[in-house]
Length: 373
Image (tube, rainbow, N blue to C red; front, side, top):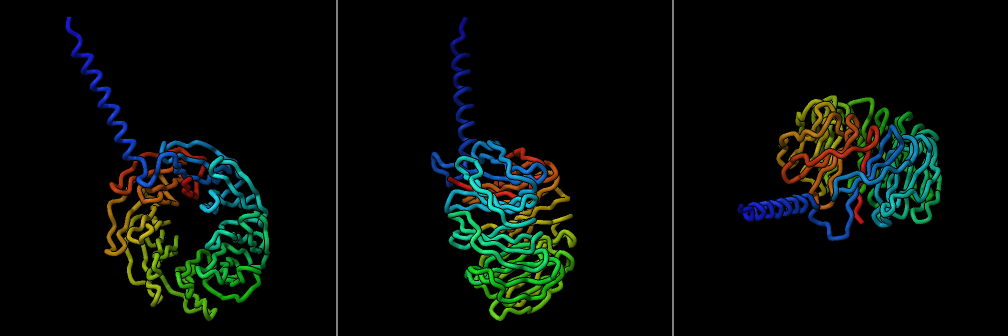
């Protein structure tokens, strides 16, 4: 009985299978990674007070880190290989060492903080505490609060101007924006803006700021040099997000109530274009070169890539039940999208606009950040 050829065939199939697996692994591996480098995603889970650490090479969750109730405001500090975030329920900022996935600091900042901002050199961090009407400045090296300032009622976020000269605070209950000295946190001015101001975008030359309203279909435009309101601009729907083109020329405003995307010319302060996108486009992400905007549609369960220059939407990418915040990996190989309804992270291959996999997270994920080390 001749069985040799069968063994040779089996061996050949095994070799071919191994080569196929290797090719798939190489295809999924981000192009910029060198041997020994790690690419990680960190997802805040609001309902269980944890962070899910996800290995983006293996496409698997590798750790669950308790940080406290209602974590939010997650931001990477690449200078120190650290991740900073906030616990709104506990009123503190926390610092995570991404190499060990262990918390190394908790910094009391005041009641109900929601967002954190860094100075350009990452030596200082700023947090507005909505429940205590205060703003704090933190030394990132010592992790100590080095200054405290007063804001208006229910301050929402703190944003530092690109030139580092002015700290802006949106005050929800006052309908104002406070302008503070970023070193002393002394008040330099208060500007009345739209009701329930929330998000702030600042031009790269620090000449203007744009502020969204949670209550009206308007955006306030502030002259930061003269410290005055230029206009309250009527728009076609309640702004859900605010994204500035890298060169500062345009502002992109997804709106769930308008079912589309509005584009504002930042020189004329006028809405120049509108694109109908889907059911409920609620959040967006711009590619680093400003060529593509990825818009998450919560109701449709997909992400819509938009070519900005030609104002053209590509075919939606189905990702889950309620996609929200998103991030691109360095090099732009993969798009990551959290889904609060299905408790997972969608991983999309950007080149083909195809879903690679869904990775489980904790309960009700909201924010995410990407780190390499």
